[in-house]
Image (cartoon, rainbow, N blue to C red; front, top):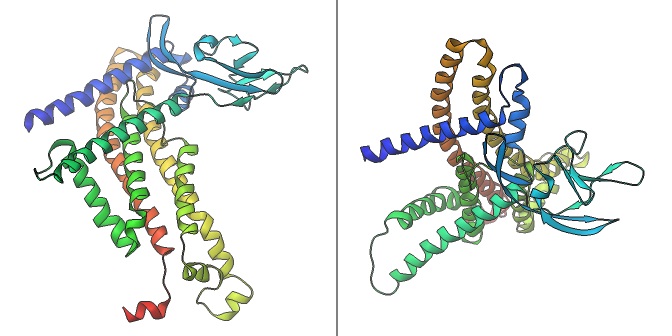
Length: 361
């Protein structure tokens, strides 16, 4: 156990140093020319290629498919390497670095105006989403195959992957889903368990600084919004008659319903719940990545202040980065747990039953 503990700590430290090396490559020399804001935005943002490392002046990247539809040029499919790391153009398309479309593929009209084509490209976040979904499918199917074997008479206690998955599934099922939803919990368990493992896996892989990690999937508001919309649909499509009665005709004094103050508040609450889910997950993951990269910036901001100050700040950075790495692992579990918990609470509230029916029980 002690050997495993120290190997995990060593892995975290090596990851920190590797991430620092990647940051050095992107820092363009440090000192006064170094822009920490640009570096943070670059690392937490999406991209049309997957940058691995930089050796000297040579960028090592994995090109990703670019799929565009232009009203004037039709469909175009090519690899992002055609853009020469965002500095070139291909068939009239190029990545702009300023304006409202900064970092996106644009084209120029005959009048010289920059416009966006329909963009269906497989970006870094989309590629990471596909990879993590495949990993999640493998983990679930591998665990399911173990339990299928249990039904053939050769029972054995789960170990390794099956044991870890059983602990997580039973904990979320018994401590979150069942108490929050009640008797209909089995109807919503597949969705809530999928959400938990999907967020957890993407959070953890996002902490790994080397391929296939490093993408900011759950720190992308589009991803968190889609997850929140799924919860929104489950809450409102499968909501009971009593739930909708409490929304439009709550048990409050008549004058609050006639004006109507409380029904308006309840209707607004229907839409603020998914909004809260979206912002909570997005903001926490994005903040964690930004803080980790911000600590890296300390090394480059002190380059021209002398060897003594730079060495001390580098040492401080390594210590703080290791600490932040451990905290981020904890936050990855907490955010997956909180999103699942809140989704279960919202779904459970929508399964309300008439009060007289509850009284009999």
